[in-house]
Image (cartoon, rainbow, N blue to C red; front, side, top):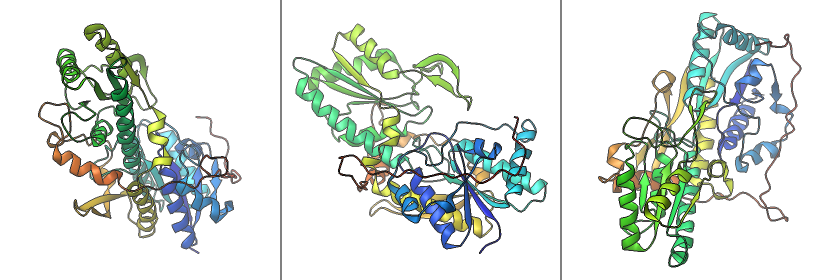
Length: 418
C-alpha cells in the first residue's frame, strides 16, 4: 500500500458527469491501494476538517457514481485570495493535510479551482511538505485554457441541442395562431460555448435556432429585433438561443440583475431571455415564450453524451496516475488528434498556463453575421455530443441514482474559526 492519503474535492457548479470523474479517481486509487478522503462541500470541508472516508463505501456505490449527476461529496463556490492575503486559510489547509497524511490533492473544478491547486502546490513547496497537487478539469462553460474541451460541457451541450430542436418543433406547430418567437437562455458568462451548441439543433438557413446571441459579440438591440422580424416574415416563426452573458458595446451585461457579486466575484446575472422576450413583444408585437433551463442543462444525466462520460472518467483516472508519478501543479487535459474520425487523448499540462485564463468561442466558429455557428464550429462541437450513456432506470420509471453514506473521519485538530 502506498504511503500517504489522497484527498479529492469538488468545486463550483456541478455537472452531469463530475461524479463519473470522482468514480474513476476512487477506483484508480483503490487499485493502487491508496486511501481516498473527500472534502465535504469542496475546499470548505478541508478548511473545516470535514473529510469523508470513501473507503467505507462499497464498490457498487462507487461504480454507480458514474451514472449519477450532482456532486456526491458536495461542492462550493468559495474563492481563496492570494497566498499573502489569505495566508491563514492556506496554512489551515496545509495543517489539515498534514494531520491526515495527505500527499496527493486533487481539486475537480474550473478556473478558480485550478488556481487554488496551483497555490496549494506553492505553499507546500514553501513549507517543504511533500504534496502533489492536481487540478482536474470540469465545467459546462467549456472555458478552460489548453484543453480541447471540458468534461461536463458535452452533456450540457447535448441537452441544449436536443431541447432547442424539440422546442422548435412545438413552436413551428403553434406559430400560425400562437407563439411566433421562442427564446432559450443558456449558461455562459463570458464564453458562449453552450449558446454555440444550440446551433447543433439544426443545419440550414430556416432551421432552428435561427439566431444565436454570443457574449463574444456586442449585442445591438436594433439589429437583433430587425433580425427576429426578418426571420418571422420568412419562416413564420423564430427560435433564438441567447447566452446569459451577452453584453452591449460598452461592456454592460444585458441581463445584469443588479444583485451584486457572487462568492467568486462574478456579477449576478438575471434572465436575459425574459428581457429579450419583453423587447420583442413591445417592439415587434409578436407573441413570445421563453425558457431558462438553468440547473437542468448541467444536471441532465438522463441525456448525457457518451463522449463526455468517457472523457470525464479518463481525466479522473489520469489525475491519479499523474499524482502518483509526481506531476505536481498539473492538470490532465484532453487533446484532440482528429476531427474525422474523432479521436482524442489525455496529456498533462501545467496549471500555471490554465489558472485564471479563459477560453472563449473563436471568431472562426461564429458566422459572419454574428448570429450562428460556422462549419468549423460545427466540426468542433458535433463529436462532443455524440453517443448516449443512459443511466439505469428503476421500476418507478426514474433513474436509479446512488447516494453515498459519506461517513466522516474523526477530526484531529481544533475547529476552524475562520
